[in-house]
Image: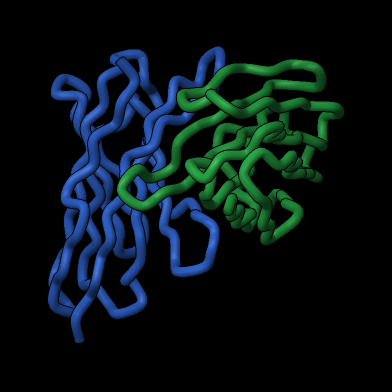
Length: 109
Length: 113
C-alpha cells in the first residue's frame, strides 16, 4: 500500500497565524490531494495536483494556497489562519484509488 | 454539478442484519465509484469500488450496485457485525483527465449487538 505521511499530526495556532501542512508520498503517484473533514460535510477538496509544479483548484479553496514541489511533496499553506479553518486535514495520493495519510488536526484559536 | 448526496447520515442496525447506504451523483461523466470506511481516529480506507462498466460488484460481505441511468450507487453490508460500526463515505470520480474525487457527507453506521 502507498505510504502517505503527513506532518504535523496536531497543530494549534492563533487567528492570523501562518501555518504549513506537509505531505509526502512514497509511491510515485502523479496525483496528490488536500481535503478537509468536518462533521456534516464529509471530505471536501481544497486543492490537488497532478505533478510537480502543477496546482488545481478544488471545491473549497478560499484561504488556502498549495504547492507541489516534487513528485513526493505537497504542501498546504494557510497564510492568515481563521477559526473557520479549524478542521481535520487529510492528504491523499492516487493511482486511481485514493490512499490517505493519517491526518493533521488543526485548531485556530 | 459535481455534488454527491449520501443518505442516511446515521444508520443503526441489529447485528446480523443488513445495512444499506445510498448515494446519488450529478456528473454524468463520473466513471469510478469507491467506498471508504473510516474508524474513529483513523484515516479513510478503501473497502470496495465499482467502475461504470459494471452494475454490481461483491467482495466478502459487501455488495455495491450502480445504476448509471439514475446516477445512483449503493453499498450493502450483509450480516453486519460490531466491527462494521464506522463512518462510511461514497465518492464519485471522472477517471479520465483530472481524477477529481467528490465525496458524500458520510454515514455513521452503528451495529447494535
